Image 1 (cartoon, rainbow, N blue to C red):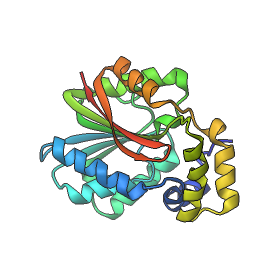
Image 2: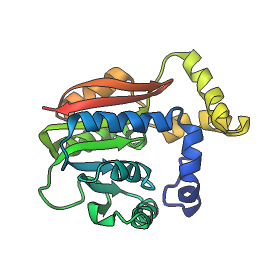
Image 3: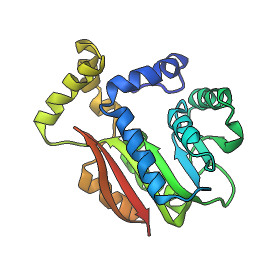
Image 4: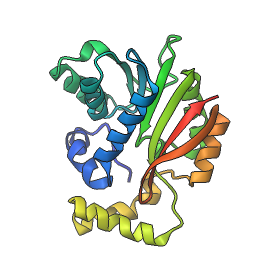
Length: 224
């Protein structure tokens, strides 16, 4: 059964657990920040789709005093955790929190960039085209999208290595085995080729891989 992101227990454990589950979690966020710095101006507005507990928000808020953010999450428990997190560091004035989906908030605001980190692999395949089209619609013409997801991987050696790497990060053998058994239930994975085609169909000109950690891949895509 997929994790319930409205569960308070899941929310409270998320920040510690995710670092065991996702190889290279910290490095990936550093790469995202570097790409954003290279692309954005000093007063950028960034859309964060699936803001979770607010880790990436805090990271970027602390490094870029002129940036503002709109943070969206369908889980009220996650969103409230993020709000409390950002309020604790005194940065709530720079973040507009929205409970729901990207197609559920009003206004004609467009964004310089969008982040969709560890989100799309939870979106059913039938809903993915509309999901990414909505993000593209809310980006400025020069806007970029950064994603990072668990991909469909045909390389059996990489898939055998994944639980071992998670164990090196702190998961028990039983936890890593349970993770692998849940892949088909918890994740709607795409191959890299299918993912890139989906982004083109959604309104992005091209996409490239900027990060990979075994079966996890990060893509950068620019709006048409």
